[in-house]
Amino acid sequence: MANVVITLNVNTSQISVQNVDSNSNFGQGPGISNEDFLTVVDAGDTVIWEGVSSVTASDTVNITNINLSRGSSVFKSNNLTGNGRVSGAVRNNAAGELEKYTIMFNVFNNGIRRPGVFSIDPKIQVNQ
Image 1 (cartoon, one colour):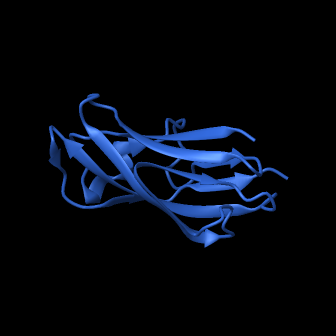
Image 2: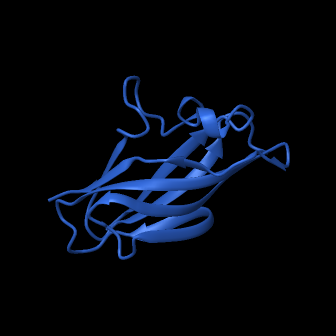
């Protein structure tokens, strides 16, 4: 059992509800969309989602929810909540399961909240 950290990098000065994908990423290589980004974990791992500004350390990316959107829930709950970062334990009996989930977050740029709630739908899979 390990901690697996998923870091969401956000251009906090440019992001809007219309351009989430072009202004946020997980550090994945070219040609891999945010929706195709896949994290592979083991049963019993704790997954921690955190957001960071790719512009300045003084801006804030607050991850508020992780919600099941499709597939099997690899966590004990279909809705994980937090304030700034969210964590969840992978079920011990989730081996081989694949989940499409939604990350909900908000952004503060220069101390001012950017309008809207932003979302991205990556995937997580549990090793066999």
